[in-house]
Image 1 (cartoon, one colour):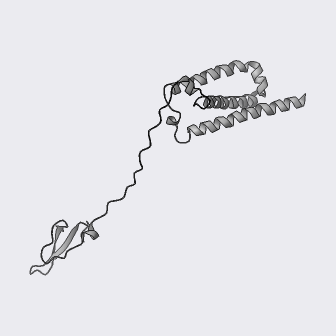
Image 2 (spheres, one colour):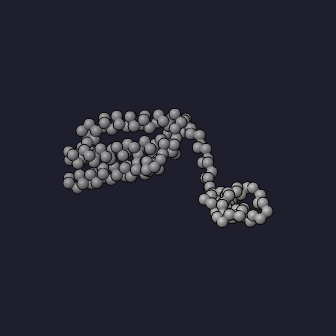
Image 3 (tube, rainbow, N blue to C red):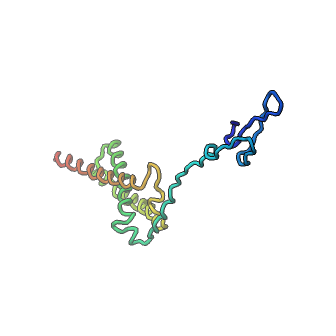
Length: 174
C-alpha cells in the first residue's frame, strides 16, 4: 500500500528483474489481471459530528415600570440584595476599623450615606432594566444572575444577624 489509503500500488513486470510500481487511483476501474479491491475497506468513513440544537430565543423583556418593580419582577430583590451586600461589607469594615456598632454608625450620620447609596444603586440597577436588558443576558461564568441573588440573600441575612447580635449584646449590658 502506498502512503494514502485511496491509492493502490501494483507491480509491473516486463522482462525486467526488478519490478517497478505504478500508482493507480481507486476511482478507476480495474483492468484485466489486476485484483479488485473492495471500496468498503479503503473508503474512510466521515466523522460523526453532534451539533447541539440552537438555544431557544430569549423571551421579550418587559420595560413597563409596573412589571420591572412588581413583587416578582427583576428589580426589587436585586436592588435590596445589592444594598445589603454593600451595607454588610461597609458595616463590618467600619466596625472593625473604629469599633462602632451598626446602630452607632446609623446615629452618626449613617442615614444620609445610606439614602445616597440607595438612590445611586437603585438608579444604576433600573436603567438597564428599562432599556430592555435582561438580567440573565449579562450572566456568565462565575458571576451569574443566580449567584448575585444568593449573595444578596446571604448579605441580607448577615446584616440582620449583625444588627440583632449587636442589639442583644447592647441590651444585655444595660
